[in-house]
Image (cartoon, rainbow, N blue to C red; front, side):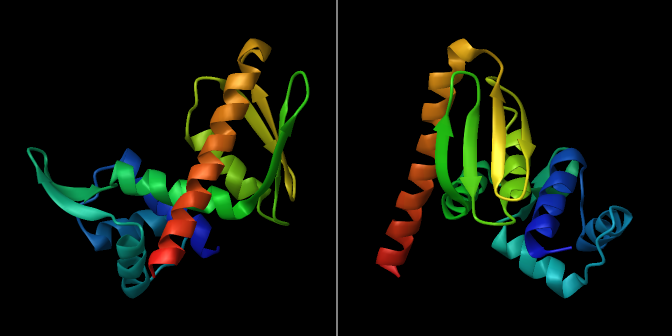
Length: 159
């Protein structure tokens, strides 16, 4: 399992369960098929900007929505090569081997105008819920990738 898959698994576990300790998170990841050490998990949590917070329900890890959105935008910008369409589908071309990861992110957005995705090695078919919403969906997907490229350029330029 690669780092991107592990990061997606961490975010999924934290999004769906209240996890209070790294030990609990390691256990949940092992149950999901990821053999992860505490040191690796600690680095992953830092990279993902995941923090422990105190709530009325106790202390647990949470995702930062703003940081998460920025990371997704930057990731999509790096992976997507082009976005095109016909009368009924949006077709996204990615770097080789990256389509399934990008499709997983798109599916995870739970976008109201997306019925579903099908991913191959470097191509994703995105089916809009309605062809009447295709142009709107196309614009949103393109903007997501463009904003990610702008963030990358801003980060590189400021480094």
